[in-house]
Amino acid sequence: MTLSVFNRQRKIAIDRAALEEFGRRVLPLCASEKGRGLTNLPRIEIILISDRRMSALHRRFMGIAGPTDVITFQHGEIFISTETARRQAREQGTTLRHELHLYIVHGLLHLHGFDDLAPADRRRMHAAQEKVVRLATSGRK
Picture 1 (cartoon, rainbow, N blue to C red):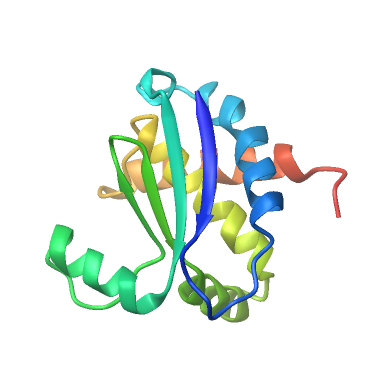
Picture 2 (picture 1 turned 120 degrees about the horizontal axis):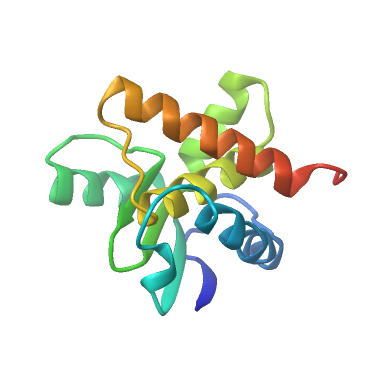
């Protein structure tokens, strides 16, 4: 399985290679969580986009106006809004890098069969997401 990160936005400077390395590092951690499907994909593409483009995807595929943080398509595409990540980082008192890491793991867990619509599923997914990010970044600056 290959994992690639594509930067399709120009508003925020991103270290694409570092995010790709992070994605490859967390892929087996996500696959080890109780779920299904992630290992059946030949290719995963993480596409970094603007709020404007995310809003269009959000409306087209989910019928919801406005941007969101992550949209995952089950054939292996994960769209991430860098502008939403930056906004959330400011609101949460974290860093852009941390938010992008969370979003990558969130998308990979969706591909692995996790869902976050019901409160219990959302708690389970959040716990797995935090665990994976913690394991992947422990000892790293």
